[in-house]
Image (cartoon, rainbow over all chains, first blue to last red; front, top):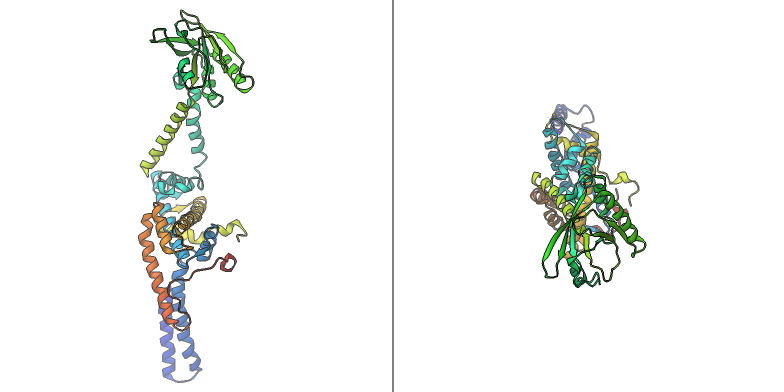
Length: 308
Length: 124
């Protein structure tokens, strides 16, 4: 365009010169001044044009000034920002285009941009700016939620702690002297948080009975494992009792007889100490579950990174 | 300062042109995608400003200079931007110098012009 303009102007300029050479029929003086001026103007426009190709500096400066700390900005800064934003736009576009092509489309969609952003470390700061499409969002949630609910017993990790260890940790004062040979009670502690309830709720709905493994220290110091089976109904009861106990009266006890092996122990739920009874603590370890979740998230993140 | 939220968007026409330049001629771009890229670019400017000010602060400098911006880009893993920007910066400095030489009479400041902290003045 500009070239054409320039050429045409030069042509006209020549005409003007010819006109001057031919004679002074018209107001050649004016023409003489006029055409060089136009030429100059066009030349100037050329320069300005090259500049207006970048993003508007005033706008960029305005955006920069949103940052309270950016009080003084060098004159070069908006220019650099404009150029950087330009490169940024094109890079993001190209990365998104890769996904458009991958999906055999010819129209770049917003979802392509979201994918490009999620797959590249550089663009992490944009994850919330260009959210993934609704189609992919529920899919993600589905993968998160059903796992605990569909999980069978092995998804829930129960850690049995011996009463002695618990006492050492200062969380319980129960005196456990020769307790373990004939364990009568199991005390199920869950801490006071309710976060662990969701996976267990899922278990209640499953029909399978839940197996616990009970560690018992005999008087000789050996550790033996005694399996305990709790039916879903019993667990439900336990859960209810615990929930109440944790929230309102810590001394509340729920006693459920279990269909148990030889020793027929009683499952007792309490957050209070039971002096003179043999206690075995059974706690759900939420940290473990949390860390499992974190691991899972990390794996997902790593997968994305690898694709970047 | 900012009256409307649209004031923070980069002009759609320019963004659209930049996008088109980056893609093969047969490519189409949905409206939504264009808006998303423009928004991303705005956020990028904010993001880069924040880290540039951080760099400047660390050095006890008050004004954000080109050097700070280049360093910030490096920190943000946009190091690939640095080389083309440096080139651009040199060009810009050349142009400025030429201008100054031609306008030899008027101004004598030759390093850089620093704007003072009065946003109202610089707006448009």
